[in-house]
Length: 539
Image (cartoon, rainbow, N blue to C red; front, side, top):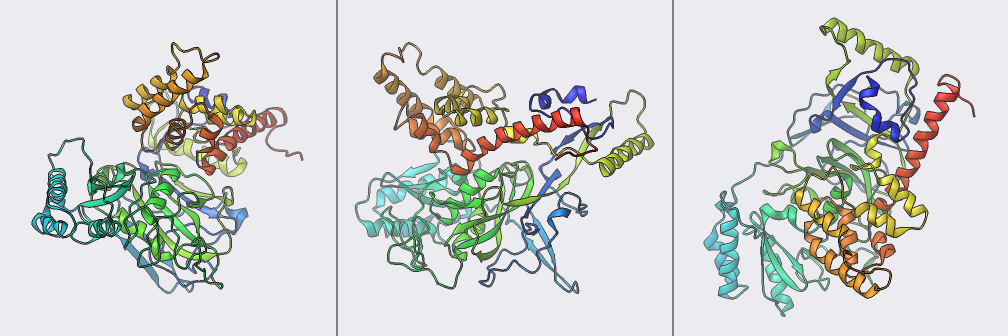
């Protein structure tokens, strides 16, 4: 059986096994809810989203957090759970004395029909802030986009430049009011306000500036809560002249719960929706799968709890598009909770492990005869007994090497200081590319120097790369954060590959090195098992 499925795995060092058991094949993650992950921190706390409200300001973990010792992480049995493929979340937290249970139901609101907006009222309110023509244009765009039959390409309406700072602020405030909040969002690009229909929120750039509550320009106006564009507040030392309470720890620790969204994209969404400083962002211990239901610990620096909780409110808005689960029409689920202040930042790699609940479907034993229930029980029982008695080799799985199985190659290039090769590996054409648009963009990139003597005409090479980068910027998918960072930088600084690679988020850059470390570990572990067996460990 293994010969049918492990050809690719063998390339990455997964070539020996602890048990002589024959093994079997199965489908993992047939449904995203088949893969549930709870991160376990260094102290044995399991990440569970149990509270969406603020908690008292203290350093201790919530009392309802279940704890296990680090030695039990790999062996503890998974509790039975009944979960449905829905965005309705139900979490149960047992109190310390086990006398009662507190149950939290966070039911995602039904997608309301945006066309129910009072367009006449919207127009009247807009005219109080803007002239008649731009007011009419905004309402006409929102009304047209609200139609279920709308198939146009226009996702936002851009206003002419508004020199008056107070007028810009008023526009942003109006878009956040109850009058427009169900159908519209506003952001600022190059000094001009763009009004988006709510259904296109997922297409807004991750680093978009949506204006502070009470401020709508890019100069950093403060909100009524003292929060501005970079997540800097009146009570935040990041803000010059501000102060942070001396008795409050620096880091806001929280649980990030997500469905069908990868960790990197979820982190960027949190930064955008909570208006955090993009340069600092949020920190986390490890990447979690996109196709799954995952909970993990994160932290951010000197942020008020109420500011972060805006993520839950924003992500409930009708029309939000995210990771793609079918029950919510293509929308991912993202929540933050269990907020508490801590003196310690959550850093990459600072976790004790992960606790998994996994459903295997379409199990295939390679059995050529009639497969009865008795045979299935026998084979599964044998496999379970072998796992219990012998254990398994803790290899790094294929997900560590990326969708195209080449992240470790980037790591090798980085260690060599060859940033040009690192960028080329990330940007090159991929055989498994699903999007035709992205495939064409990669092909365009690969051919950017055709007809140019790169060695002898650097200026022509820079010009060609700059034009190519600019031409494919909008073709990169929302989840292609590395490619988008590289292209954006090279559109401004062509041929500067070190700068381009450095523009990728720090945690993502580290993942390339971790991939190569994982590759080496797999190779060494397989060699050790093949030559020394799995029963006697030699140090």
